[in-house]
Image (tube, rainbow, N blue to C red; front, top):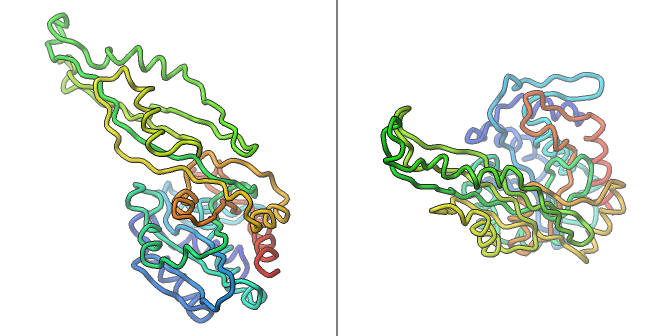
Length: 346
């Protein structure tokens, strides 16, 4: 079976977040005759410990909801369909690497970790349960998350934090607004400031991360003829890996200090760069791609937070993730497979 065949097969198995059982079973069935497979709910840890140094590959099996793109389609250069780039192309490469006899006979104990619920709330992410249940994964000398990276080697990742930024007023009849205080318009000056705010570049190990504050949701008011007494805005903060969670929260609270109330609703630490790791240098020499910062959040942060050196490197295209017209170049599959086969076999 070719990489293209495998990806088409994976795309055609629906796996919208919360419905990963079928694709997990399909992967388990395919690999069970090749490698030992440990199933943990709708997650799999594939591979065998023989005493050689451990290298692990990670990929999530779920996708965002379908947008009339649930069936795979192949043309001369691209494979189209839900999850093609994010990140079933990475899963296809993982499957073929785990089936490769040359890698199996090589210098490493290779493990594949397939997990669920990545596309939802960070607290529900299935990888956390896997890492708790299989603590020896922390012994890996190097781990690779095959998220889309445009064939680049993406190091670290920004952290993420969301907060309810609340402005309060006093309800009154809209015909007599002087008897109340409009919570929505009270927030106007702060919202205008946020609209003008520019991303702040932060250099780490020669890589440029961007600190970004974005207003993403807003709600307020109970009727068309009542002044809103409460206006709640979601502030999404992406922070570079120079800030701890406590430091990131302090920065968010400073930026939103004009509000009457600030409630942190979720957060995830940034991912660090495994500087000085010899496997990083070796992989970097093989990729031929750019060495870049990861602007978005990935499970590299979850791994490095546990002391596991990890990077992002995968065949998907970042701009294609979550698109209605999602696709991936066919050539990217073999490009990443060849690099990682060389990395793992020697």
